[in-house]
Image 1 (tube, helix red, strand yellow):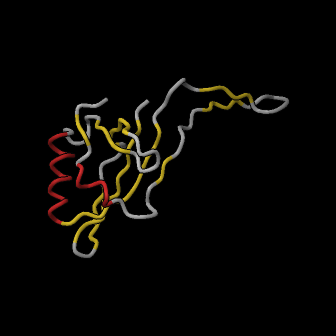
Image 2: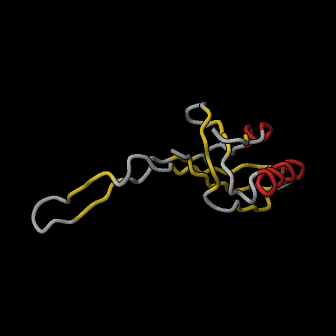
Length: 117
């Protein structure tokens, strides 16, 4: 497991209906001259994309920014995250830089992660 944990105070802030998770796209297809495509597994394990939006107050944004910029070195380091789907701890890293948008009294932040194999 990773050395860092997702900040506990940010778990309940995932906006309802925004959590998405997909199995890895791990199938390599080859078109044949005759018959169906040939398929094979690309690798034995791959990352699993996870995305969600969170609502943060201005105070929570400070906590998130500290975690992302300083603790994770601008999102480079891996961290432990409790999956909303399985309720188990998974090891993740940021796939993209978080995107902030104004949202009432706080900010809506689009998070894109990769679950590590």
